[in-house]
Length: 196
View 1 (cartoon, rainbow, N blue to C red):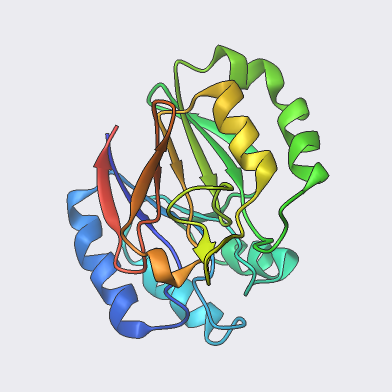
View 2: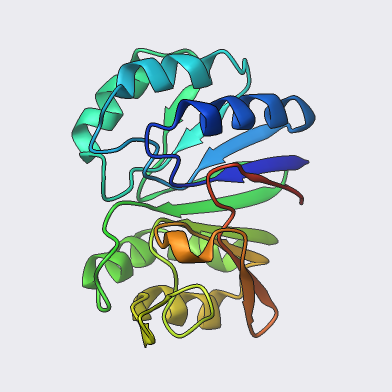
């Protein structure tokens, strides 16, 4: 399965159009949050993404209110709200935790993990989707300081997903790192296709 991941398009029509064009070569599309700039033109952006005609999993970022995004996604056919949730597609388990962006410690993340613990342990191919990056990687540094999330990093160490994809920090679009064998990646607003 080929999956197109993107993040932080922030209401940029040109970036959305690039994602739509790239989606022709993908089986699934995943937005890791901040599809808007404080929800500007949210309805129009989701309508554009809906024209892809394939499932688009939509995580909220720190620029989208969770309930607002959830309600707007319901008005589309293919754009699915995906936050604090888990789903299996073609033998691949996707675990999502969007929103936030500035918490080094987030106990709610751990609570969501506990809720899905059995499925996470049994997952043969696990992909972690978050808006905020994990702590202490090359994709969470701002002004010389690591600003990622410790809970996400601990999750990666414990559950060893194949990939941990996130956005949020614009300085690191397209960059990747590793935690153990897990590839940590910020796909940026134009997106990256990964064959899983």
